[in-house]
Length: 373
Image (cartoon, rainbow, N blue to C red; front, side):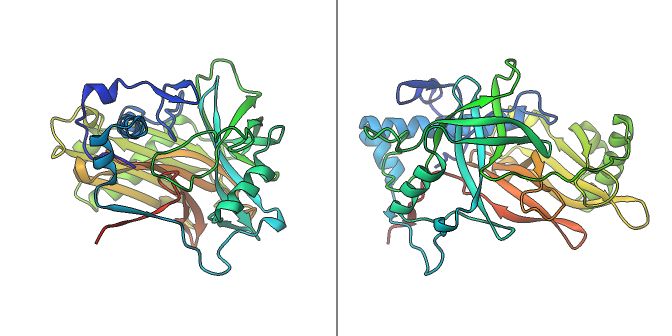
């Protein structure tokens, strides 16, 4: 659930968020990256929006009638419906991809996809199926490898599953009957200086193909990224002077899409984190570039925003990993709309460009909701 807009009462913004007695410095389901290569100021607004939304949820739980009316107005909650054969077959013990996030002192882990016969698949289960899933994959003592930058980097141990404490579930959302199960975990092998965490984890080993990266200096990466971005920007009417005014970050790493490194660049309007109104215009450009057969870098993915902030949708780099085992890493992005929920978008290399092959749910309530007649 999300609240549109950025205006909210100070009471909502200052609300203490707690799950089973623990205070959360970040809203449920989000984490602000520390030391990542891309601008965090605008992403902070996605966090604040969800903070306000969760404060509203907690007020509903506390019995605030006005908040209840606000959240439930015009909506009906229904049990998730599945077509025959759509439910994930747990008997085959499919590999599961998780997202690990939150404060380093008290992180959480949530399933985001299953890998079945080399395909990334949404996890669709009945209520009893989710209970079985929690018992299989999130029971205390289970341990999985963490992945960052395409390779294993530490481990994560499950301390408590969603329903392993029979007295209560790990978390609850008011008015939501079906929840994505979450687990409380311990992360191993990470520096103590990491205040917040965001990783991928897998229930099955992910094989990383050794690659000899062609050396690129940061200056070379920046130069190529800006040149490719100018061509993309021109196609949507973004002038060079405007592009040069945006906060810019670029990185390069090997994905296996070509012999040369893949380059990712982000251009974000830093002034958008303090808008005077939702009608404020903003500009955002996110590109991925790879070398073509002629040896020149070209855009192989782009996301462009040049319009009102209220309708803006943003992307940032999250990580890369060969999730489906085809020898080419998938590129994982985090997406959000201003004032809305966040989600992960998985890009796969298809026909010489990056295409979205999977997108996670934008919230953890699995109930189907429809507008009342």
